[in-house]
Figure 1 (cartoon, rainbow, N blue to C red):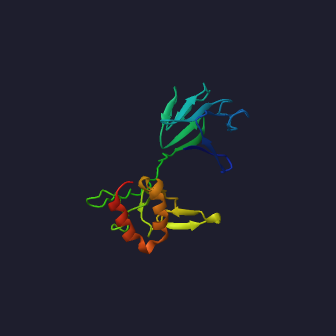
Figure 2: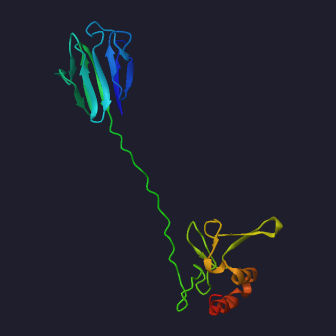
Length: 207
């Protein structure tokens, strides 16, 4: 960002925020910054913000444009703080570097997929002695009937939610067909009996 500061004869300060569109300075009323002084031309110079800093261009003024005591004969680009003189009138150019910082957000680690030794069956993330029946599509957590959160709605329909992020959990593919789905209803309903029933279920293998 860049600002042009001018002190009037009465001591008051005026500022002009510079943009990428050239801002014209001079004595005429159609300028972006009007300076009513005899040494300033009607259209004296242009100042604009550029990728390299602040660019100053003289508009063939009568008494010249000066930057830090050096005449501006062609467009010049500067950074930082500088004194701009138009005829006998001094202004200050203030250019500040703006650093854009993009915040970094920590991403949740995906929990490891745990399987029971020998059987290759996926097990619950929290109870590794219990087979998993659901997986959360959000945090990928494997969930057993002890851990799953249940919400029973009207007409007897039950929703199964992840205990970690409360997103609806998805039934694992091995529990989504025929006899196994019927068995699922019985197992999920009796959590206290589920450990023994699941062991028997795993030994039975696919139907």
